[in-house]
Amino acid sequence: MSSEPEAWGPRLAIALRAIRKARGLSAAQVAERMGMDRRNYANFEAGRGRLNLARVVGFSQVTDSDVWAILAAVLLDAPQLALGAADNKMLLAFYILLGEFVSQFGGRMRLLDTAEVVATFSGAFKSLESSVAEKETRLSADWLREGAARLGLAAPAGLNEEESS
Image (cartoon, rainbow, N blue to C red; front, side):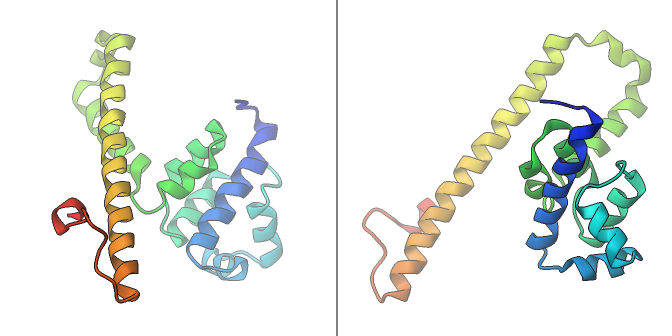
């Protein structure tokens, strides 16, 4: 993982394009909503030039996505983070909670040791991992049930309403 500025442009391009396409927007539409001409927007979306925080914030506003997830995606080389958090605002929620924690504890945060912090975040991510796995199972069950119904068939054996609720 390289957090060198030269690597940011291509990473930003992947994240921005994925979000724009997921939102069903054309580059021209986003450019217009951001108040940019198409050429400048094309350069921005292509990740050309220096990372412009104001433009990333503007993009997140017009696409209703998570600015913090876009920035983290660039730094972590994880474009799927930007798209994955576009709707649930995962990193925005984290930063809001972090801000509240900082306001409450300020410099006393230094009393926490790294092992405590890692254990706490690991536990939170394990909980989210379980939630994703449960939702994936439910989506599969719903997909099978709905597909069978479209074909005029009964739901597959062992697939009852309780399993997908």
